[in-house]
Length: 236
Ligand SMILES: [Mg+2]
Image (cartoon, rainbow, N blue to C red):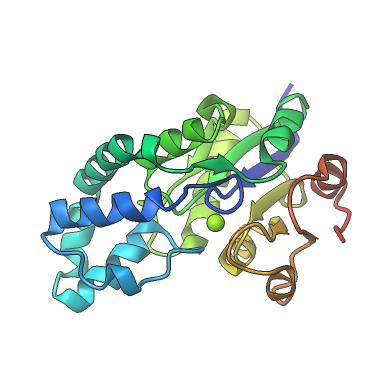
């Protein structure tokens, strides 16, 4: 039986806190691959794709956008290697309620779980495992090397989910869960519903401005979040 609900999670600030190791690995890998970190220390990461972060950090330092694009595959390998080397020393932890919510969704035969994340693909299983998730629970996704802006990612994730499922998900049965305004607005590209969670750098009030369909302080109230995902009910 094809599944009927698709739930697409952001990673950082939504499923887990990486304890600074994402930024640290990025800094090391950018130096390795491009020979400079450019303006990386001044670039905010939240809600952006890694490709976008590289463009903002490196083009002001004179590295052309075309060169960044050409070296993304190499960068993906290097940043994953750098993250593996440092992650055991970082306080990576799951966001409140996230493990329990994923387990509850995993137990629902109507639900396919996936990812829409700004992370380079190589970083994803490393971060998920470090926070206690099983990457196999997220069989499809779209990643930060696949678009220089986040809105480019949901159509990729949806196409992969439809192919994986063998049947198309109706737009109102697709939910994107994230912690930034970018997660909310990127859902417009596929007409998906959105659930915002204030476990990242944005407060509930700041997220509310962008009119998510559901809004929660954390993912801890599993039954309320499940209702918002599966029945379209608003959070509090
Ligand atoms: Mg995030």
